[in-house]
Image (cartoon, rainbow, N blue to C red; front, side):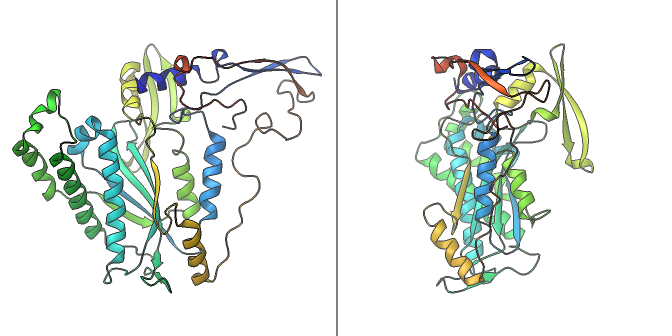
Length: 375
């Protein structure tokens, strides 16, 4: 049902059936319709304003230290579990990532400090296949246990990747065993044999021996660049419109970056049915939060802890420009009157307004549409 709502919302986005405003130029008489956006968080066109606001807020939280971009990836053997129980699995994934980073950082021989970070869940790869992984942006250092010192990581080094990988593997598999033993995982169809505890144990056993992919590198191009990379996917999913090159004869062609062969851009063509199937694999359950913070950046302690960090680092809060992000003269209320895109001289004046559909299920949107969308 959730996937049908998302498809309906994306299909109706910025179409006449969504309602909107009709503007007319007072010079040339040209008409410009501005249709409502769907506002769905999976839409590749919507919520540019929310995305810019999110990025600006995160920039306000930056500390004057080196930052690292850490990526922790789930092995493909667990993809069926993630697909069958997305809420349970992804909550456990977040928990495993958070506890792994906090525990390793708190160990005196590694860092001996309380860490803070921002986590973002991605469930896709470049070709839209399932590829669950968590991106973490984290400062290279943390607060001492007594909160009186800032303890920095060695320059260019965060935490030992092998230790992170081993602990991350152990925690996620242990959490899965716990929810399994509590009967929170139900198995149907092709996964029915896993209802047998012995079969489930045999299913997990090889994963304890496998090396799990964990990467930790200094934020490429600086932390601002890493945040901008994550911001592109905080309010949309899987693919941007710019990567889709054509839709002809029931075939969708899109570009993807081939990381296995020198990060080269390549093209892939799928049937429309297969393209939609892959896209819909990444529709998250309603209400699921895929951006989370932890440690001294956790929501309930962030302001107080950041103030302490800046005091210990003898730094002031960063200043974010008043105007940030992509904005359009047609999108921002309070700006100068929007100019006509036809003649470039006249001013657009509101002629009529059409209300959004009265039945939310018609468009499948669980979020109110924006009459002025800045994306």
